[in-house]
Amino acid sequence: MLELQNLNKYYNPGTVNEMCLFRDFNLQIADHEFVSVVGSNGSGKTSMLNLICGSIPLDGGKIMANGKDISNLPDYKRNKRIGRVYQNPSLGTCPNMTILENMSLADNKGKQFNLRKGTNKSRIHYYKELLASLNLGLEEKLDVKVGSLSGGQRQAMALLMCTMSEIEFLILDEHTAALDPKTADRIMELTDQGVREKKLTTIMVTHNLRYAVEYGSRILMMHEGNVVLDKKGEEKKRLSASDLLDQFTHISIECGN
Image 1 (cartoon, rainbow, N blue to C red):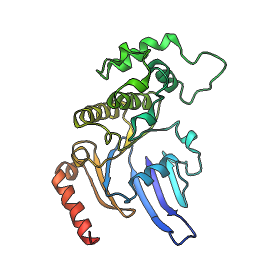
Image 2: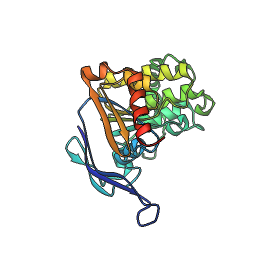
Image 3: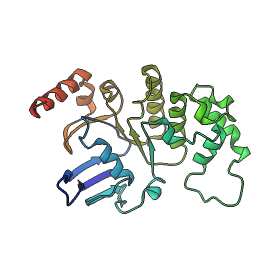
Image 4: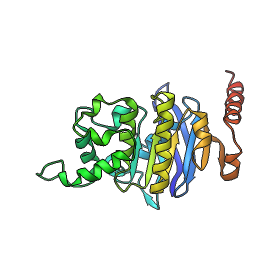
């Protein structure tokens, strides 16, 4: 279980531009839940992910991961339990390294690097099997630099590499936003497949209302640092993209937009 307990987060503290995004914010995400998070820009979606991953510091409260307080752990230590895929495909891979070298890096995540070769040739067959599951032909391009691949191929690799190690939580930060519709659909299929197979507790921030409705077991809508809609199970199944759009419109009118 992932628990956010009484989180507080201020931006530009002590200045005329001080802004409190989260004040005593609470959220519980059960084991193996796949939570889709939607909301307007500035609603707190990405800030919440950054707080969970340790990319930005807390100003109060606790983050508990399966009963362990990780609030003060640096991001590189949280990465042993948390995998993250970003909006920009280049952030999840090393473009100047080959596919094989990238796979080797992901394979060694969290392990000690001694004075030995970074690429273990005995693992090549294993890497090819993983890449073949993507159905993108990457298993035949191990010596190709990742920077020469398409955005969709790189994002598929980033997703695969992120889940190679024994992580408990998967964080998806608008990971289809930079892709064309067809490629984005394929990445979502791969995402859903990976989450189900590995039984990962997953948080996906997205602006695609159709994906938010179609995928996952729970949906949250955020606004000004608060959860204004929380549906799971049968309630979520009855939601449509139009329902979410209506909620967005209602909030926008209330805010005078």
